[in-house]
Amino acid sequence: MEKEGWKEPSLEEAGQSQQNNGSIYSSIYDLINNQGLRETSSKDTFDQTQRISFVGSSKSHCKNPFKEFGYLNHDPLEPIKNNWIPFDSNCEPSDLLSPLIQDLQRFSRQGVDYRKDSVRALPWLVNRTVVLIGDSIERFHLRDFCDFLSFSTKPSFHEVSANGFSKSQSTDQTPSRSYLIDRSTKLKSSRPFYLNEDAKDSVPDDWPPEEKKLYLDNFVDWSFSDNIRTSPWICEVPSYNFSLISLFTIGLEPMKSGYYYSKEDWFSIPTSFIDRMNHTLLPILKNLNKVHYNQTEPQIQHSESVVQKQRSKNGSDEKVADEKGFSLRFSKDKDYMRPDLIEINSGLWDLRQWSEDDSRSTGTELSDSNELFFNTQLTTQRLEWYRTRLIGAFENLIKIFPSSSSAQTMAKHQEGKGLIEGEYQDVDGCRILWRSFHHPRQHSLAPFNRVSQLQEFTKDLLFNQLFNDHGNGMKSLFENRTRVELKSRLKFDRWGEMILGQERNFRDSVHPMAFPSNSLWSQMMLWELRESVIEKSKELNKKV
Image 1 (cartoon, helix red, strand yellow):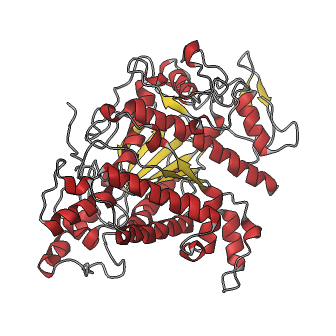
Image 2 (cartoon, rainbow, N blue to C red):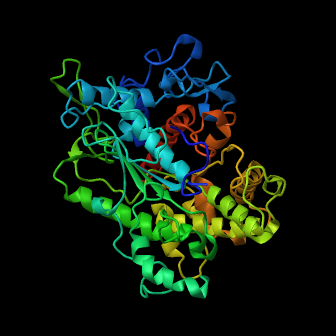
């Protein structure tokens, strides 16, 4: 039974390649468009009136259908039809889920051993890693994507999770599987500290004196907390060696280092956005590398210089496509430490703590009928607080996931010699998506007037001031390297704006259901990942 209130941890709670110039870039398009690997037809999933076909075919006349004016189609009977439909009849909607599901059907229901079959409908998806940094919205995106894949096979392996507050129904036998990262997975960091790695018993200075003992008595348990709602999650598609990893954050920086939430059963440390990136996410990525390098089951590899094999029509002969492209050979070589796509967001928990702060300071009850929260805007001081910490989060993100080209250029200019932007304008780092906020139901912890205000504020900061180099001394706000990298890598993810009007199809006051909202996200994620892979391949090609 679906919950009506916001019961999450209270913000979760409350064929041919390189015939032209031998480029990796052209070989990707050859793989997508010319090899006939089921990414060129629409009739398997959509009727003619909906005009759906797979983006990448010659039929589409728009660069990105998700940026076109259109509408979100909702079909409760045929989930794959929940997609963005452009109004322009010349712009074909993108459906990359269907060919992926067809592959999983072959491997899981038709007896085809993916370890021996090198054909993939989406060869660019092989061996990829996507990192999601945000809150419960990212966790639901991951879980619904993973559930949807196993749900869509015929017969279905299991249903899509109704509320997301229970463990996944997936198993080692399902074609896709998701799980929370807890101590049993051997992926979690084993360093029980909160503030200072060298002084593990450091007590947060901003905690009330009478409560500091609470910290000392509990910080080890908090650092190992295994909670479905706030733990990191992983989704894996073994036949593609594809992984999604979500990191839950409690906003950019909880007040009093998270003190107000310390007695909640979902509380875990560290609490700041940056500390979670550095001390939770990075150890997980490193441990994933260790686990997969040491495993006995082979994994699929892709590389720059390999032999692409494609089975001929009779299934017996092998055809060498070229030396540069994608390999579907099996190998243990997968680098989790360099994601192929990153999604990032912070807002719901920042809004929540501001509402809670207003409630404490005014002695007013947090209530969805209280006009205080719906008729007041965020103050300039709060927006500046948010701006400073969001910039710091992006600085840290670029530091831990840099482009190799910009990193090399930075090394030349470490000692105060300044930066020459032209030397590293073309970066080979993956795309970074800023996931837009969505319109919740009426809720005092995330009042929609403040959601809208924060949405406009972040768009102005990240996609106006940053890109135009003006306003509020932007050059001095972002480090030069971060500014240049973000101008090349940062994209605006419209998902939150595109699901406006779907509030009736929510799990609760804040979390959209899998259909149609999160199935739309899944289609958009695959599109953006493919574009990120192509962009990186272009940059690699420039260097060979």
